[in-house]
Length: 461
Image (cartoon, rainbow, N blue to C red; front, side):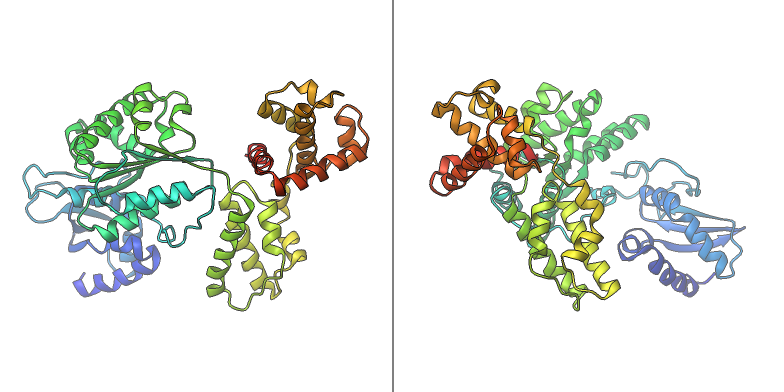
């Protein structure tokens, strides 16, 4: 096979694997020869050879045979002066990238880190596309400060919060910004699961010195979903030592988790202590205004793809109100609406929204009970549950009772008479008065407004 023919095959592979995979894994391959039914390619590193062998060898073999070449298998060998043997296309674990070849030219830490970056950064997750609101403004400001790449001001930065609140978006945004502002820095972003996998593999292959050298040579270490190393004692110990080594070198560490470090079960105390010594920032559940802002931003993005699709007034407000727990679900619902409306040639109105998103809306229906609201309010105001339900009219009991009635009206589908019965058999007019009173106080009493909002977030979390 000629180099020209290989060039033609590369164009077919580009269409099949996509631009990112092609640039990372296929483009560096150099065709050498076809010897006795084996197509031999040279690769820059053992890591790349093993990865391509495991993930793309069958595709390359298929394209070679489709082009008329008589090839039974594909092999990869490290280029030029390395004595490494060709890698056969048999499934095998992907090894750690070589930090230095024993008999060849040394590979820089930057090259090794690039090979390690198995999960590429998402181009959509930048600071420009992140919608800032009150629940996430502190996390956004802290991420921005770290992304400037100046002297380390707080180390580590820990971002935590529930599913779909923007932790991964901010992590990717920091990495993009750092690479743009300071391309000379070694920025390594990976999940805690990847860290654990690399560690276990290094133990198995007796290459711990390579592992330690690689992770201690970064300028910025970013570990996503650190809760996954909880309970893995050996991995936690290595993470602890890596953490200390980087802090001692004044290198930046950025961590994300689904809860505060102190609340992660089976995480060693010394690891918790290290994570808590920096800035720990909570991404709160989204409020209505933030969800609406996210939807409005996404609508502008979708208009580039679906310029003819119109969206009726009230639809975004409806979605922001009904889908309140997960931003990913919210964005996915809007994407589905635009795609469906484009296919059927209709405007996105309330009828189409309810038909198209019936399953999502059912799943996101509020299932908060009156009893749950009563219990949460009594805990918040530090009074007994019996005092909220009972007949006492003291102000210290009456105001929390009215707050609980208001939340029952807002967050459940119960009727006013039924709510009254759950509050010690009170009349529905008493419930109406309580709800109206809280609505009035929210406008004039900042403390009541804050109490109601805090309780609503706690109940919807």
